[in-house]
Image (cartoon, rainbow, N blue to C red; front, side):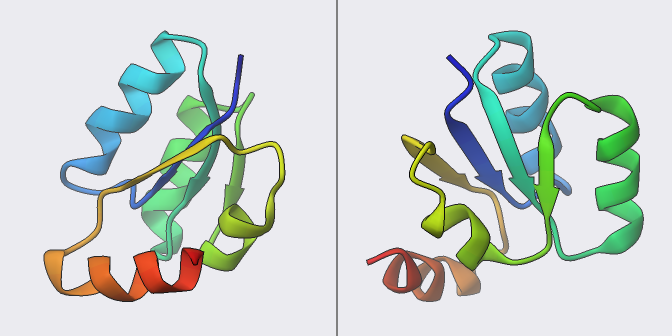
Length: 82
């Protein structure tokens, strides 16, 4: 079931995105860098993409979210999810 999202698709996030896609679970990727997002969109055209974390948190079909952003942004993203 495609119900996992990943916020951050860069240095480490690209690995999480690849693994979730290979498992058939990747629903959405949130990436603010347009070049990185476009590269991921080309590689995983059957997934949804956004540059707004709020889009991920509002989606009722998302059952889990992986956060692969720089450590200093994790707390704010978790608070946004609540």
